Image: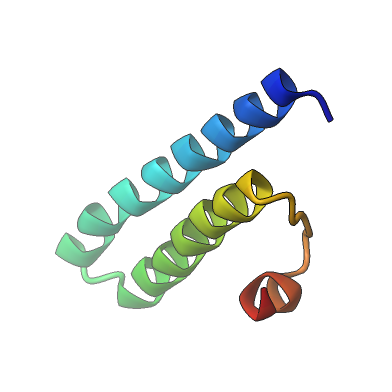
Length: 68
């Protein structure tokens, strides 16, 4: 993957993480706690996947990413 493609993907994953985490306040205010936990988990997954890509580790598997 070229550096510009890699950087664009990293930025996309960061934006996805940010958008996902921003949903959490709304969900908590509306007492949707299980959904809020889900959004927090996926926000962390997206940001961690961006970080791993920066260091040339890429996977779509949650357990592999957590293990990394």
